[in-house]
Length: 480
Image (cartoon, rainbow, N blue to C red; front, side):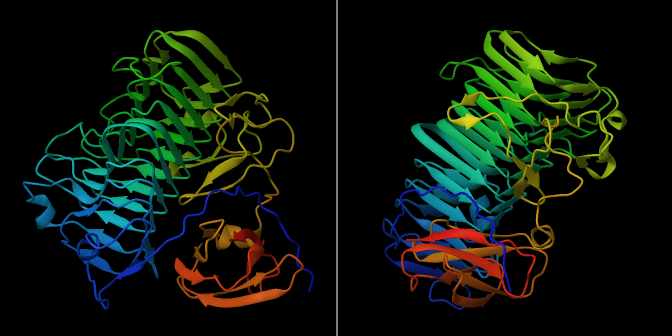
């Protein structure tokens, strides 16, 4: 049988070597994370078995280069009275003060503390990487609460919902990043912040907000996106929605507490779909004195009774946006069910402009589209680029298997272990691993999010493919 190989580009980066493996689970020696955290050392790995862990004390991760991952499924860490009544250290479920920590495939729920800013993850160390996690009903999903120079935080493939505190409305959010250098926020789903909180708030000097859905549907939130101190922000390929019950009629705020971040103060907004389902409102509110507002290839749908753009930028570069007070005129598949893909007759099809500009190495020409839930797919171009977050394509280039059973592997490159994530079924799946000449070198049957040992493979490039699926696209990965 001939199998067509689709090569996916990848970037090699430094691979950490993890020293000791610690395992947490109901049937393990250590049944809670709080028992392991004091024992780990730099470079260790902590695996948390799939289960629900209720009312564990706050966990302080003080070591660096840690890899903390859920295995066999996504374990749920559910905060309770111990954290809620902690008068000394009450900050949240995980407090990460070590540097270069990676957290993966874990659910954080119900974090509440005396100060009313209980976080699923409280970041206090340099360079945090959060992958494929869920944050449900915390006062703060992720909170970086101070100033950390030369710090980069990356959040990807994560789900945030119901963040906020009814006891202190307006000050808690799904995600809140304070004064760091760079925030990368991509392929996430942040929605329905409660009690006048934001779906997204960041004071970072540089924000790269790429291919997410950031939305309020029915809860009482505030702004959908708040960037209170300016700096440089790229907002590309996102679906950004304000629901009918939002307490703040402005969708995106920039520099509203002063342009105190590192200049230049530039806001680059490219190929997003903005939807306002209130009968009042404005879309973009910037601080006067903002150096540049770049606004191209966006759909801005819904009422703008307060104005489309509030505030004045020194330079405004705006073109090829589709703006309409009536969502029904936008040619969406079904706005009532939040499906903002384009119909073939949408005026946004082939109506965009090509952009060759790059900002800090990010080309402002989207090559991806957000895909439910917390995934992305490629954005194929047939003619001129479409306006908005989605490209219309009647014959999708996405293989049928990926549409039905999305799967990915990480980390990629691998240092000996990979996690296979797929959707569409809860049953175990069989995969085959091929070398570059097409020979099967390993066959595995695994459950979703199960960690696989590939350390027996020689260094090199491999492909992984679902077994007995002729329509599947192979995923390229590198074993090191």
